[in-house]
Length: 303
Image 1 (tube, rainbow, N blue to C red):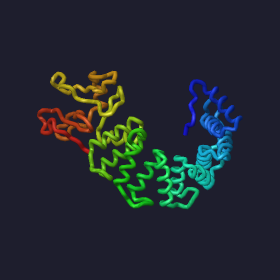
Image 2: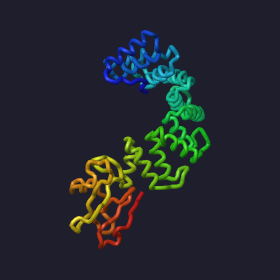
Image 3: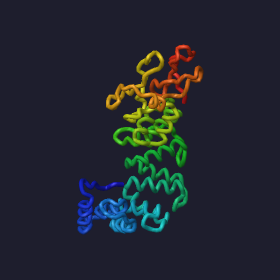
Image 4: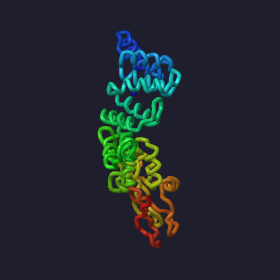
């Protein structure tokens, strides 16, 4: 977790953190450890990163405790030790650190460094979710959806996913999960349109699962503005085929007709009846514009 911002000069930022450390600031120690871990303004050194996290942890700084737990879990700057990871995650979690609470829930979920215990996993995921940590919210939602460590409650799962997906959190995993709920009717009535809308929100933040689902649903994105579902058929061109244009007002190619190569990239599969190229309509729907085809202008939405 980034605890600081180095506005213009990383080296100057390091000097500020060193000065804070000299004054005994545990927060400064965490920040200095983060710089060593990621090579911000200083040569990357995982051993020194671990050293500074340890100093902060010993001063009961929850961020330092969480970070040292992560070092032990993944073997960064120290020999991997899952039992010590659990110890430090617990220290931070008991202070209300949301990410540490989620990490501790993961440990009980997977039996990593501690005996596997679904109920305790749910307990810590709940604590994490209550603190507002997005991944904790989604993990708790998954438990309710699957009935893992708690009685299955799809409606509650959907509510939690929606909490993570909506303002002000806007967490991409939450948005993808809401889309999946709408797609499969988990805790909510099936609604393909809403599923696509939420997949798009997640995809625009780079969620790979959402991108995969959109592509599987034949939802396309403009190669210029990279916005999903903005490609529309505008008119018959020379009486032969549709012109494809982007209708995103912020797109540099707004209303520009795509060339044959690009058109091929963003067009749909061929019509199963006549074999002609189908064109995108909206929200994953496709239509055939061959007037002689029995499927002419019929919406084809296949999930």
